[in-house]
Length: 222
Image 1 (cartoon, helix red, strand yellow):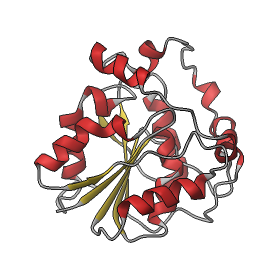
Image 2 (image 1 turned 90 degrees about the vertical axis):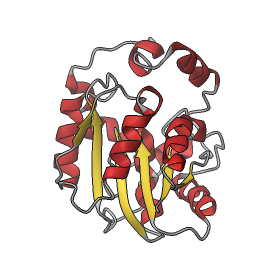
Image 3 (image 1 turned 180 degrees about the horizontal axis):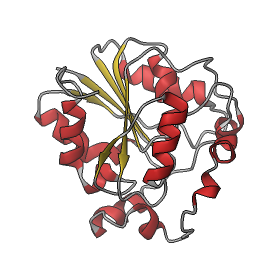
């Protein structure tokens, strides 16, 4: 069985994955879902990767799964430890030397015509059960540190690891058309798609676990 390494996005912690964690464990897999040091202003992206590597320990048969901003951390980990598969779930795809602060302008995010909405529920949790959405907001942590946002992404190329991209068809933060373009332009791949909004691990945990497990099937397309 695999070890799934679940890396959360900005403003979240390992709790974000707790429902998917339970689903994967019920299927016999091991799971690691650490809290990244986003509230430590001295921590840059390499320190984020260090935290994940410490949590992995001596585990093997790793499937790296990153949501949203976790896309800046997961490849750094996969570059340093043997990884069977890297999966981005509505993930940000960095380019070599690109600071996260520059990603938005470099990708043309603001030109996507996304409807601007300051309502956190409407943007991120519109399809999440209300009690879970409230708990997620209660657990909200600091966004990535200023250092992590300003430092250039340190890899010279994407790691030589099989990579899949799973976008969320109802995502109001990263619209599907935007992610299709970014995945094609930056990784040369066509994304897979799942129903649900940006926080699909809270709205559709069983379905997401199904998709993650299916990626291990050598008969899976792609």
